[in-house]
Length: 130
Ligand code: MN
Image (cartoon, rainbow, N blue to C red; front, top):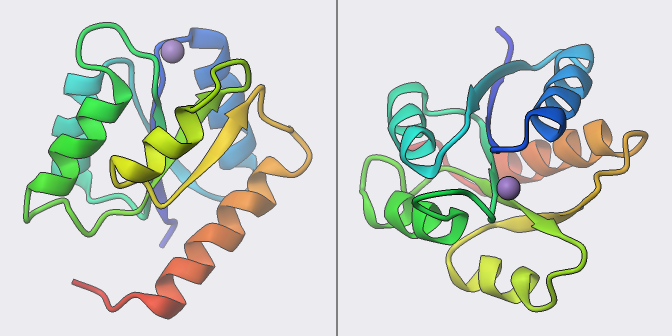
């Protein structure tokens, strides 16, 4: 069965690009455009990985991560923050909020799928299934 990745991203072009790359790499992709939808879908789908844009309208990405990490039903989920390159300090803030890693945007279309694959593999080796 394909592993599902949930992408929470409000920019339609970024969302489409990441979705296309991951689907081409063999993943199933679920999409959310807001932090609120991201939190709801993460709880429903329990994806192998959540890719969380930090800059979202309404509930921002860091708040969404804190929300997920505070809920026993979703705190085990692996989350990678999508951080804007220009925003200094976003990386540290993402880790402090409970993210397991971060990828800076614009994403590198060549290495992105393998970055994601490596990350999922590393998590499944070192983390017991809930
Ligand atoms: Mn954004």
